[in-house]
Image 1: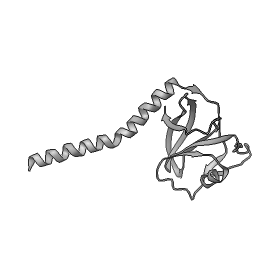
Image 2: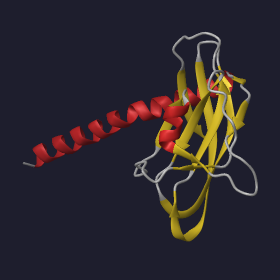
Image 3: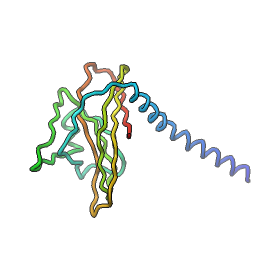
Image 4: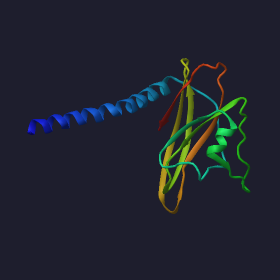
Length: 161
């Protein structure tokens, strides 16, 4: 009985480690690519909000290449401070990170977008958490990047700095 328990525990541990391998491999790959990549110009999208009919129970990493898909996730938040950033959908696409709903003041800042010769793109960002709020919020960030000249499949990595 004791041997069976130990065997099951070791098996569960191996299964747990293997299930995290793909995540760890992606993080390691993103860090390696980020070090060897060249910067890509990007525009941070301002004055948008995550729509309240979007499921915000888990983190979402979005690659959006058309206005209709973008409007399914985000709404415009024009106010006295300015209008929402325009996206030229013929020439640009959007990389967005939406975090789960929280009651803590949370900001996500884009740090860099970099590319490599073998068609990999790394979006680096920083998350800053603050005090508890009396309401909930959905933290997100989105950037517009020029579409590549070739229509080759691009691999995109997200890297928290």
